[in-house]
Length: 128
Image (cartoon, rainbow, N blue to C red; front, top):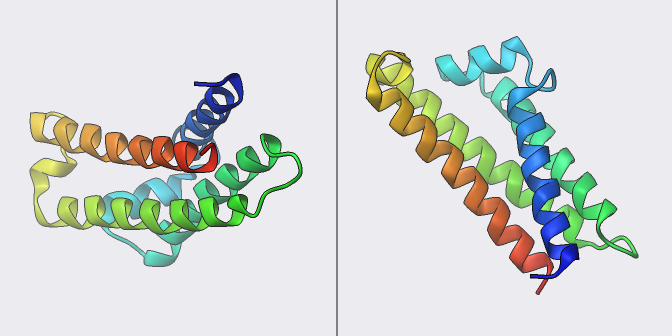
């Protein structure tokens, strides 16, 4: 793995952290993800992730690559789909929303793993 590829991947991981665990993820976004909507708020959350990924690609591309738009689109669609799926499951099964239940943590871990594997795949695609 080249230093540029490692930098891109680390940038994606930081972007993911910022999108989910910083003030960029507003209380309303957290509520929408927990309650299954409104869809526009979950979409806004996915858009934050897409924009952060685009910024990372632009920072690691010289000259600016059209891959930024593709990566942002992939992240928007997949992040929205994963978060919507998790939130809808949580609205149907109370244990999935209860941090006191092991299944909550299993689903959260699976959700985060899926997001991160998508970012790894994007980094590999961009650096090919």
